[in-house]
Image (cartoon, rainbow, N blue to C red; front, side, top):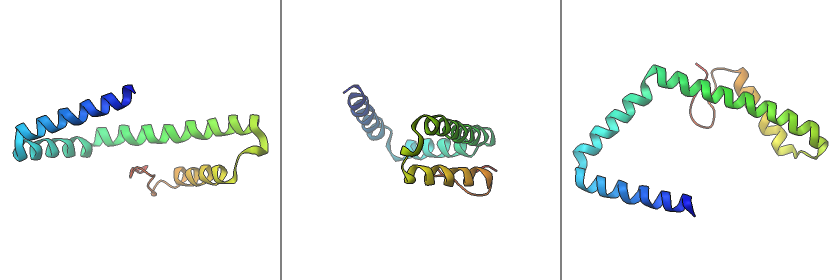
Length: 101
C-alpha cells in the first residue's frame, strides 16, 4: 500500500510540476538528465554496479543450487549461463543497455 501511495504522490507531483513549468522547463530537465547519463563517471559507476550485481547473482545462484540441488529449473540455469556469457564477453549489452566497456 505504501508503494502505491508513493507512486500516486510522485505522479501527482510530476503532473503539477509539468503543467506549471511548461515545455521549456521540461526540455531543460531532459537535457540535464541526458548530460548526467552521458557523464563518464556516472556510466562507469553504473557499469561497475551492474557487473557486481551479476557477480553476486552468480555467487547466490551457486549457494542456492548447492542447497537445492537438481530442483533448479532449466530455465533458471540457462538464464544464469547466458548472463555469465555476457559477463565474459565485454562487448555485449545486458538487459538495461549497459555494457562492460
